[in-house]
Every structure is written in C-alpha cells, then in structure tokens.
Image 1 (cartoon, rainbow, N blue to C red):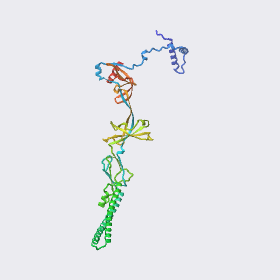
Image 2 (image 1 turned 135 degrees about the vertical axis):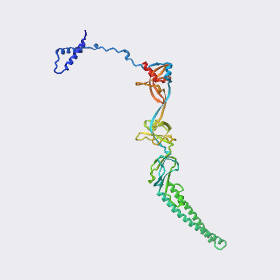
Image 3 (image 1 turned 180 degrees about the vertical axis):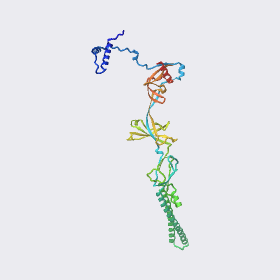
Image 4 (image 1 turned 60 degrees about the horizontal axis):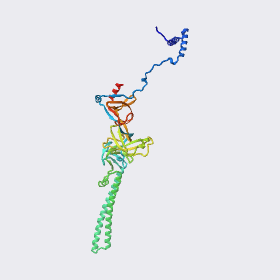
Length: 435
C-alpha cells in the first residue's frame, strides 16, 4: 500500500488546480477542487522552516585545498628524469629605462658641400652611396664668374708683358748712354753733369722694369686668390697666363674620405652658393639620438652606458656611452634628446635606422630562482623544494623582476633552500598521480 504524506497530497492538489485552471476560459473548476486548494494554501502558509531539512555536507568539503604536495623519488628515478637542484642565492637585478632612438651621421665626420660661385653643372662624377677619397673629384661646374676673373687676368698680364718688353728696350738704351757718357767724362770730353743725367736715367729705367715685374706677379697672385675663393684649384692662374687660354671651370672635390649619403645635383642644372650639392659622411662611428621622457630625465647622465638593439639586426647588441644631453625639452613630444657615440667600423649601422635603447639606472641584489624551476598551475606559480634526501615539496612562489636566466623571488622561498632546476615537468606528472 502506497502511503502519501498529507503535505505531498496538498501539493498535489495545488498542482492539479493549476492544470485545471489553465485548460481554457470555458472550463469551470469543480467546487471540491476549489475547496481543497484553499485548504492546501492554508497549510502551506502554516509550515515552518523546521519542517524543511537540508542534507548534511561532509566537513572535509569546507576545508581549503592543499597548498603543497610531497613527492618521494628513488635515486634511480631521479637519474632517469635528469633531476637537478640548485641552491637559492642573491643575484644582482638591474632597473633600466627603455627609449626609442635613431642613427645619424656624426656631425664632426660629415661634410655638406656647396658651390662657392654660381654656375652650371657640366659633369657629375659621384653617385649616391659611393665611397670617395679625400681630393676625389665629385663634379665639374662651369662658372661665368671664374671665366671673367681669368679673362681679366689674361688681359692684365698681356698688357704687363708688353710694358715689360718696352721697359727692357728703354733700359738697354739708357744703359748704353750711361756707359758712353762715363767714357767721355773719363776722357775729359763731356761734363760731369751729362754723366749724372745719363746715370739717373739708367737707374730710373732699371727701377721701372723692376716695378713692372712686381706688378706682373702681383696681378697673377691677386687673380690666384680670387680664383681660390671661387673654388678653383691653385695653379690655374699660372696656367691661364702661360697658355693664354681661359679655363672657366670649378672642380668640386671631397675634403675627406666618406660615403655620399646625399646628392642633389644633375648634369646641366644651375647651381648657386645656397644649394647643397653633396653630403659626405664618414660612418666609421655614428651618433645615436634618443628621446628621454620627462619623468626619466634625472636618471640620465653624461658617461652612462647604453645598450642598443635594432629590428633589422635582431641578433646583435651594440654599446655606447652618452656624451650629450640637450638643455631643453622638445615642446611637441615633451622629451629630452640624448646622444651616444657608437663605433661602426664595419658600416653595418645606417643613418635613420630605428633603434631601441636600454640604460641601467639602478642595480640591487635579490633572492633569485632559475626560470626553469618555475612552473604554472592555474593562477599561481610554484617550484619544487628539496626538503630532505629524495623528497621534494611543491611550494607556491611569487616572482618579480627577471635577470637573464633568473627571476626574483618575492615570496615563498628562503635563501639556501634547494630548488629543482631540471626535471620539474616529470615531478609535476608525479604530483598529479598522487593527487
């Protein structure tokens, strides 16, 4: 016989009433069901909390999960998994600031070449990226100003030469007259006054010829100076005088060894002193310019070491020292420019390359653990600590800064403790089997 508790019966009656009332608007609920529903509602309202029993939960379900696991291995197992331990010790950790920067040619090794006089580019010899030597011809420019200077020189020297020839003739006659009067005076034929007059004329003609020679040489020297100021090589003035031909060209040459990193001239173009023709740079050492944020300004100083890396050279690290710090912030970026000189004998660094800078600003010692010793489980890190021979304990660890192969221990470990540095994955597998 099935016994139905009165409380269950009341709930059943209430459920039946609900079903019946939902069957449609034309359905009329019987009076006995309405009466039973009223009685059931009243009983439900009289039920107390004591009538409802909650099943008991085992006490161990409320306790926290274990925070560590002890694992015991045999010597053979340790050897099989290649287990190694390492004692915890203090190691130096550096605090660094990181900046972005760019490579530039050093100003003291860079030549910006401009024409001295206006003219027309006749021939361009240097190409962009070409290595050139000191004194090597870069371009040939025809200059009207140089041509005019040489023309004036040629006219002046031709006139000087004519005057010199005339003076030579006059000197020959005055010297002959002087010697004749000297003989006549010695023979007591002419008066002493005639002798003195002849000697005076002779000396005058000698002085005149000497002055003409001096004027001739001065004319050439003045023209040489003017041509030199115009960029013309020395000796051109003498050649114009000697050959009686004008050479109205200016040779643009390199003052130092270097690489042509800029060229802004082509054949047939007009040039003037305001237009740069070439930029030559010796890239055996370069400048690295970086932008320091305002909050880091006090951490940077002259002589500070800097490490550089480049996206285009991922496996190389370059070193340098800061040798310049700007005196004012860039008003647009609110950064301060710093500069380091970087050796570049193999010319691997190019102007305008983008760089990442790292500068160590503080170094302190902290308890450290090898990175290989750290494992991750859920939302926390852990390591295995050797508590006694062949027994290892899983220990939660909080870590901080990294320093190469080591990481700072913030919490969970003590100096001198031995942690597993090799074989941690095998220990993790063993811990899972134990749990």
